[in-house]
Image (cartoon, rainbow, N blue to C red; front, top):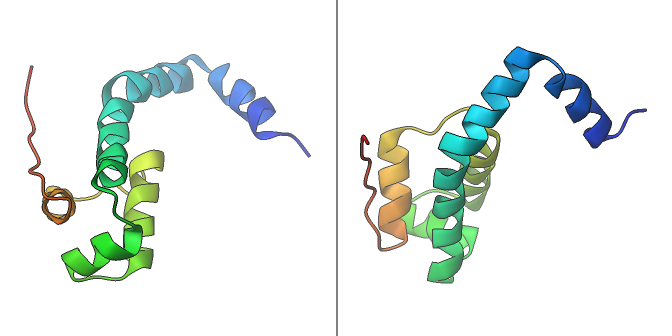
Length: 95
């Protein structure tokens, strides 16, 4: 059985996979990291965020997992509700 790192190295040896991986790391991961850090900064558990959003903790776990893996991507409406549950607003800019 191969390790995660071995499988990752094999996948990244494909130039198309490597280019997409680098794009995600450059463009999307900083945003996802900021979203996840916001909950920790707010000092809230997933259950507390879920309560504020009117949902259950497993839904927040799935949402945060989707942010990390990029699949499936949460909707803007869901991200707005998540931000509001943290006492924040979601801001999207084109630069």
